[in-house]
Amino acid sequence: MKLLEDMIREKGVVKAGNVLKVDSFLNHQMDIKLFNEMGKEFKRIFADKPINKILTIEASGIGIACVAAQYFDAPVVFAKKAQSINIDGDVYSTSITSFTHKREYQVIVSKKYLSSDDHVLIIDDFLANGCALKGLIELVKDAGATVEGIGIAVEKGFQDGGQIIRDMGVNLHSLAIVDSMNDATGEIVFRQE
Amino acid sequence: MKLLEDMIREKGVVKAGNVLKVDSFLNHQMDIKLFNEMGKEFKRIFADKPINKILTIEASGIGIACVAAQYFDAPVVFAKKAQSINIDGDVYSTSITSFTHKREYQVIVSKKYLSSDDHVLIIDDFLANGCALKGLIELVKDAGATVEGIGIAVEKGFQDGGQIIRDMGVNLHSLAIVDSMNDATGEIVFRQE
Image (cartoon, rainbow over all chains, first blue to last red; front, top):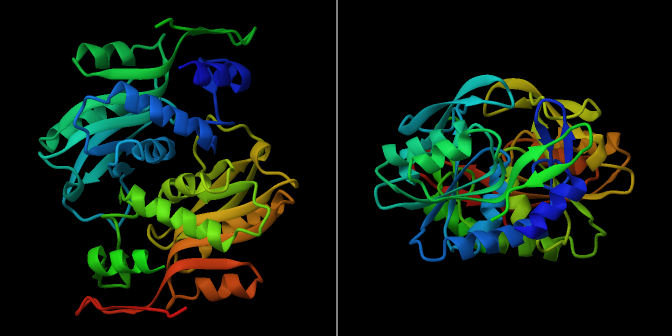
């Protein structure tokens, strides 16, 4: 998606250790006009799928998912990092290892909001090693629901998450795939569609 | 706001310990049509304010803030619970005690995304004892920015957060204020405007 690639080139910052900071428009400060364009693009990509629910994970997937949901006329459910006393005991649960925070945590979705009737589009801001996505796919399968597709804003194409998820036969689309980046020059190379 | 009160009556669940569960439409599964109506109402309430930024806090404020932001043509910044290695050191930081999770945590906003030029609308899903809001107000003031208003979805009017914030002279509006609720009968009484 050219608009997103342009914003990553213009406003993204490449840091040592394969860190791409896009927190000025994607995951700390959030550009809602961009999110609307991303939502339209997800709708274009997944237009033929019978999507009735969007699943994301807190925190930075929520904004993108909620704005995109307007184009699908579907509610959004976000998987919670498990600590709340306000969640009923009846949850689907899985363990995710965070690349960013270097730790493992439980994520949960109430069984009330994911069922075998659901045709789910999973949306998230980033795809790197794919651990979060694998966890979300597992929650959907535990519920007997169907993963109709996965929409990602930014994929780090030089990490293996995208390949692993695609090899599972899941309909994964990333709006921008970074094939390489250089923290010395700031250069970012996107995969050509 | 009648639509929100109706949904709380219809879908909210009153539990012992003054817990009001609205996770079927507000803060776990999210009804995006409702969020749009809430966004329009926030715009109506704060129409005369020169708002150029919306501030919320992860996780459950983000969806409401992002959908509402469309009516203000402003970016959303969400305060993060401090643990990320992807945040630069240059942050505004404050401590918040969570009523839900019974613990204290640090929340941060990058100094890049909050400045003395900003006229901020704070949006969150819940107001109970006001600790999260007091923290967000402090972050805005630390940045030298202006709090133009606070928009809340559901206020527990029988806890003291609303009074404390209004006594600070802040322009606080809650779309639904629960004055009392009864976990035996399920009855919920809303404050009349």
